[in-house]
Image (cartoon, rainbow, N blue to C red; front, side, top):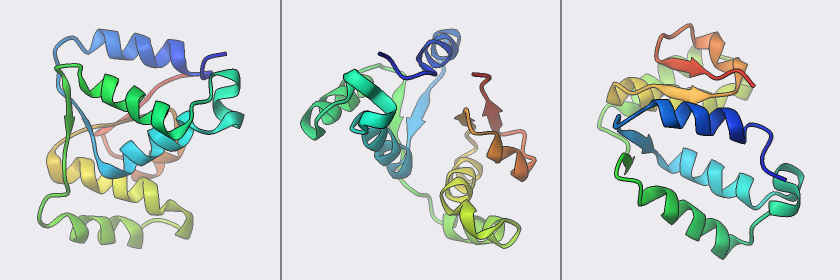
Length: 125
């Protein structure tokens, strides 16, 4: 069993061509958490070491980058949280990260619509 969104995500990735793609610490941890969650991955669930190797394999793609928080990031995050509800910490973090770096958030999570930001690409499942 593959993750239910695998086909759509792989299709989106293929159409990116040579465009750069990035992980931040939160998206990295999210991927590792999902890969090791049997409720998400079913029979394809990975042990932590296997999940790290899968992430390292992704990072060998020449388009992939790991990007640290820029200076001034926290102020953007705080402002997004003031306009969001208490359950939006991680989403607001990712949106602030994208804004601070001039990047896009690509997600299946329709909850990102609350930010009303063109930097969000919501993939249809």
